[in-house]
Structures are given as C-alpha cells and as structure tokens.
Picture 1 (cartoon, rainbow, N blue to C red):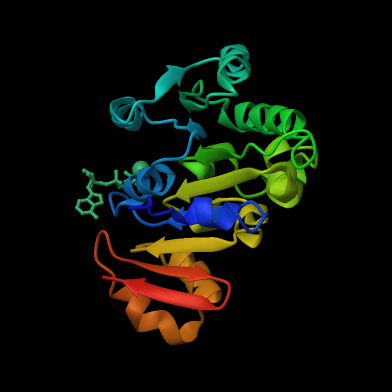
Picture 2: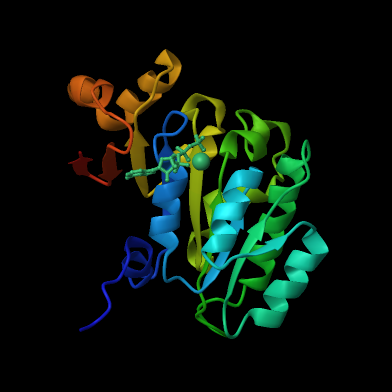
Length: 225
Ligand SMILES: Nc1ncnc2c1ncn2[C@@H]1O[C@H](COP(=O)(O)OP(=O)(O)OP(=O)(O)O)[C@@H](O)[C@H]1O
Ligand SMILES: [Mg+2]
C-alpha cells in the first residue's frame, strides 16, 4: 500500500513551501502536533529551546546540535541522504541564532529549482523567544523575517509554535499558509485567533479542550475534537 503523504509533503508537490503556525496554551499539544507533521520528512531542523522537548526529539531519532558551525557542518555532511537535527540554542540569544540559521539556509537553498530539488523543513518551537513582536522592525535584516517573506520559493518549509500568538512578530502570522489554533487562555491571544478565524468561531474557539484545535488553510476551516 502506498505510504500516506503528510500535509507538508503534499503541499511540497505544489511547488510552494509551506508555512504552518501552531498556537495554543501550555500543554495543549503543540509540540506533539509538530512532531506528527514532520514524521517521515528527511531534511528537518528543529529549533527547540526546551531541554525536555530536546529529549523527546532524541527519542524520535534526532541528533542534538548546540552550535551554529556544527549545525552547518552536519547539514553539509548529510545533505544528500537527509538529516534530522534538533538545535538547542543558547539561552538569551535565540533571536540572533534563528536569524543566522535562516540566512544560512536561504543561501544553501538558493539553487533550489534549478540545481537541486531538495526540500528542508525548519521547525521553531517557542517562537516568542526567537521571533518576538517587533523583531522585524528592530532589525529589518532579520534572517527569519526574510525567510518568512521570501523563502517560499527556496523549498524551505517553516513550522512555528507558540503559546502566545500576541507575542510573536506578525510577519510570521501574516505569511502562514495554514494554522492550527488550539485552546488559548489569554484574551489578547483569543482576539488574534478570532481575527484569523472570524467572529462566528468565538464559541467553538472558546470551547476547545486540550488536544483539540481549529485548523485553517486558505478558506478551508476544520474543527478537530
Ligand atoms: N492528542 C493527544 N492526546 C493525548 N495526549 C497528548 C496529545 N497531544 C499531546 N499529548 C500529551 O500532552 C502533553 C503536552 O503535550 P505537548 O508537549 O505537545 O504540549 P505543548 O502545547 O507543546 O506544551 P508547551 O506549551 O508546554 O510547550 C504531553 O505529555 C503529550 O504527550
Ligand atoms: Mg511545546
């Protein structure tokens, strides 16, 4: 039987890279959903600031990398056969590290579409640490901003996760091709969620339990309970 393609693989066939946002309160199931989405992909970098989740990813077969030069070395070494790397950033310097990684990925993928067709997926957990509100205004050359806006044609998929939609730079949200909205508790975040979904989803959104979500992609909206 043919292997069922996951959402990112199917989207890749359309030629455009996928940008997925996964948002929701603590413990609602975001990281688990991201791990499910990337299952079976063979070039993945998981930017993970939480040690507990780094350990979970190791169980999924990910190798832990703690420095940018080592990340570059591993990707070059393993590019043709694939890689599953979890990057554990230094505390307090997440923004710069994500920007550097994004710039470097854009560079190595600049030949995508003519000299090679290899997709890469970058997953960023706790996005409010590495791409907080105002990051793109503070530094217009922020590499992750560039990746969100212009990386679509370089075969780099992005999956971004945060507890607080309100606290991440809206350049990411504005470029999402799909979002998973789990249970939220903060009024400011609920407000952002309703702007994405429409006010008619107020009751559905407010009634979500842990592990339940509303998925939106284009005009398609789906409630998972
Ligand atoms: N669909 C599910 N059904 C049952 N248990 C789940 C499901 N999704 C996640 N869990 C469990 O719930 C716990 C929290 O999940 P997870 O770490 O994915 O949440 P999170 O939203 O990423 O949390 P945080 O905001 O703290 O990072 C984990 O122990 C996980 O195994
Ligand atoms: Mg998590």
